[in-house]
Image 1: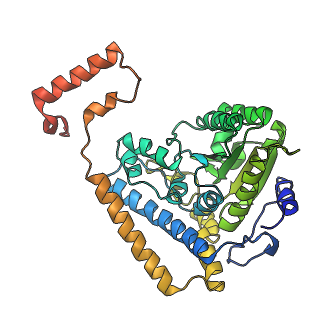
Image 2 (image 1 turned 180 degrees about the vertical axis):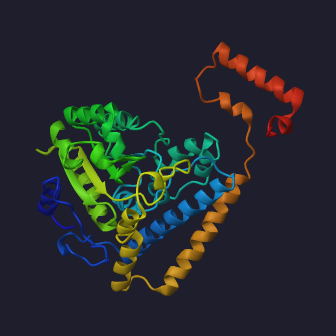
Image 3 (image 1 turned 30 degrees about the vertical axis):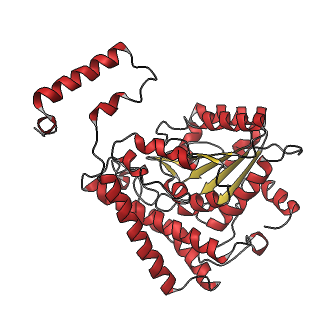
Amino acid sequence: MAGDVRERDLLERAPDDRIQVLDADGTVVAPDLEPELEAETLRSMYRDMRFSRRFDERMISLQRQGRLGTYSSLAGQEGSQIGSTYALADDDTLSFQYREHGALAARGMPWEYLLYWMGHEDGNAALAEIDVFPLNISIAGHLPHIVGWSWAAKLDGDERIGVAHFGDGSTSEGDFHEAMNFAGVFDTPTVFICNNNQWAISIPREAQTASTTIAQKAHAYGFAGVQVDGMDPLATYVVTKAAREKALESDSDRSRPTLIEAVQYRYGAHTTADDPSVYRDDEEVQRWRERDPIERFEAYLRDEDHLDDDRIDAIESEIEETLATLVDRAEGVDGDPSELFEYTYAEPTPRLEAQREYLDALRETHGDDALLEDE
C-alpha cells in the first residue's frame, strides 16, 4: 500500500466501512489497497494458511484419539491470523487468546507448542523464543498485560509494538475496557485485533453488545477503530501494516493504538468439548464457508500466476512432513508429574511442598502404572 495519505485514510474510515481487498471469489475489488508483496511472500502466506487448516484437522484427530487434551479450532480464521502476522516485524510482541495457532505458524511454530495441548506447561514457555506471550485461557485477561508491555516499550524508546488477538466475547469483559482505556490514556503502541467469529461459545455476536460494530468501541477511548474482512488475508495485512506504522509514530497528531475488528467465522466447535449443532444451523456455516479464506486466496494467486497444481502439491507434501515431525517430537516427551508444582510460585509454599511429598509417596508406594489405571 503506497503513501502515507492512503494509510491515514484507511484508518480513518467509518467503523462500519468494512475494508476488503479480495472478494469471496478471489477477485481484487480494491486495487489501490492491494499490497506490493513478492510472489514468494504471497506463496509463504498461502502455505501458512494451508498449514494452519491441516494443523487444526490433525489436532482434532489427536484429541479424538485421546492423544491430546481439549483443543480450540481455528478453521475459517486463517486469513486474519496469517495476514496480520505477516504485517508485523519478527520481533513485535504477540499476545493471543487460545485459538490463534495461525499466528504461531507464521512465526515458525516451535514443536514444543504441541506439548501445551498435551498437558505440559513447557509448551507455553517455548513461545518466548518467538516473541509470543504464553497462551491465555482466561477471557481477555491478557489484554492489560500486552498494553503494559507496549507502554514499557514506548518508555524505553523500543521500536516494537504489542499486538493482542482476542475474540468478540472478550469485549464483554472488564479487562478489555480497562486495557483499551489505558492504551488510549497513555498512548501505547498497541494493536488490538478482535477476531469476531460471530460466536462466543454459544452466545451470538448480537447478544454481546448493542454497538453496531465492535470497531466503534475504540472511539470511546480516543483512538481509531476499523473493521476488516477477516477472511481476506490481504485486507488484514494492509490494515495491520497501517496500524503498526501508526503505532510507531512518536511525533504524530494521531493516537498510537488501533482496534481492528476482523469479521470472520468459526467453522468448527468452540473447543473439542463443545457441540455447535445445539446453537447454530448448518446453513449458516455453509454460507460462511462460501467465503473461505484459503480458497479465495488460492484463486487470487492462481490468477496472478503465482501458484499452480505442482506448487500446491509440493506445499501439501511439505506440510504433511512438517506436521508428522511436530507430532512425533511432542509425543516423544515423557511427562513428569512433579512438574505440576514447578510453575505455581517462584518459591514453593509449605502447603505446596506437602502436596509434592504426598504425590511422591503415592508414586513410590503404588507405581505410576497403577495410578494411571482407569477404574
